Image (cartoon, rainbow, N blue to C red; front, side):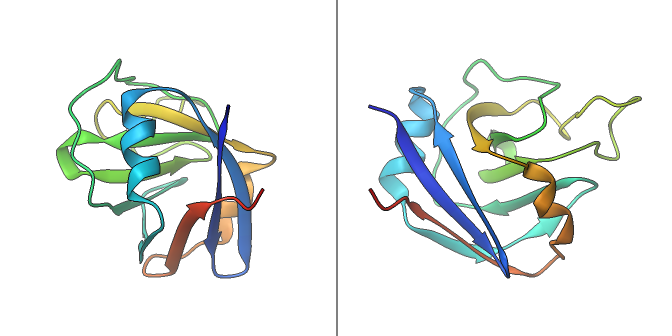
Length: 125
């Protein structure tokens, strides 16, 4: 069974689907999450109370990927190039564990500003 989550930042709402990785399972157990976001290029990230190591970590990710950044115990949403990107690639600050994907257009997160409140919860069935 796939695990679906709902992400809300200000007026922006998106649904996402988690994969079956250990990282996704640990994040699922920690839900709901609430924090304030930081922005870094076309990425938003925020600390979460989950500690997992590197799990098939990727140095370059796809648009809409959800990533867990082990060095900062952070939940990341990628929707375009970051300051580390070369060309059109999407490159995190360092490799992340990809654990899910936004369903639909992830570029809606471009409206997000640093400090905005974010909530992540299990999607209603």
